[in-house]
Image 1 (spheres, rainbow, N blue to C red):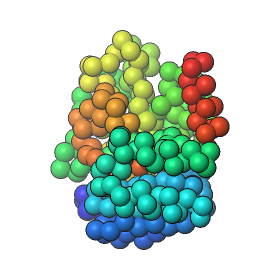
Image 2 (image 1 turned 90 degrees about the vertical axis):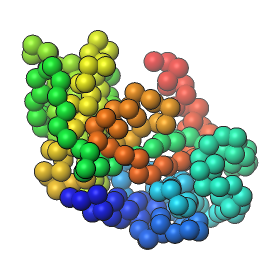
Image 3 (image 1 turned 180 degrees about the vertical axis):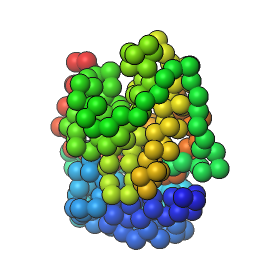
Length: 260
């Protein structure tokens, strides 16, 4: 695949996710759509969403519920595209969302492979290709980024790194939609900063491409190790996304993390 073909596929997927046209993400003006369920959307998106903002850099496509349309429209037309995804402007949106018992919840940056940069990375450990049958005993907290226990059927293929037969790193590909597989990565603490993550990520990327699918990578903007791995592995920023959720859901997520 070429970079343009990869971008085209990503834009088409975002269009399914956001109930819009792929061309809408490349306009100079913002686009607001009514959020709807879609069988072709990424599997983990709980559509319809009340407030979800996506930007490929030039504008914002906002999928919303009817009751939040005016609120979100006012927000994205008041501030610049980039500032809509960061504080202090985000505090304005959050205060408005509270009136609907909602708040800003998820913020992430998504990466696509740059085919001029993607190459096989090496490390000092043995790499093995893994398939669904190999994942059965790996649904544990230490591999929770690479694999998703709630959607086991989506975990299609992976690459493991082994030190004398012991698994020390794992990259997994989740078939989150028909044309794109998301990469998740875990490396045991003692083996980090040794090139293992990049070796796993790049190896899995080529396996995904060989299946005729587009690999994509997601990271919080503040997760510097993860962002560095994406770039080292040959990925480049493609789009950003921000989603709001009910305050009860947000409290539950925070409570779950506090109890870990």
